[in-house]
Image (cartoon, rainbow, N blue to C red; front, side, top):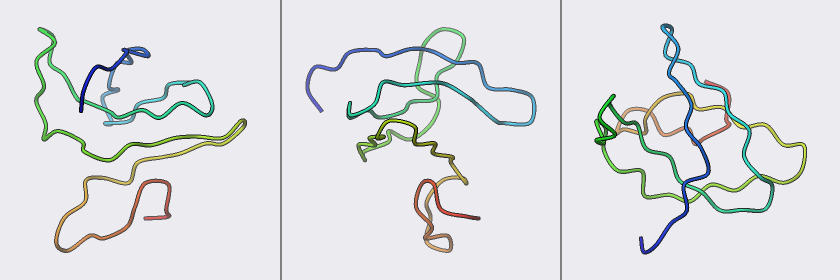
Length: 74
């Protein structure tokens, strides 16, 4: 995926939720890291991008039985 800039870090809450603000109109991906900054989940290969004022939420990982995309109701 080439060179990328780190936009920020956010802690995962005990209930598994994360909230973070990202700049609008900037493509980004997400990674879940451990305390030593090592990826602990599969690499997220899809770029996400938000328009000003837009909010996205993640409803869990994609899988063969769950085909909803990011920001779609669970």
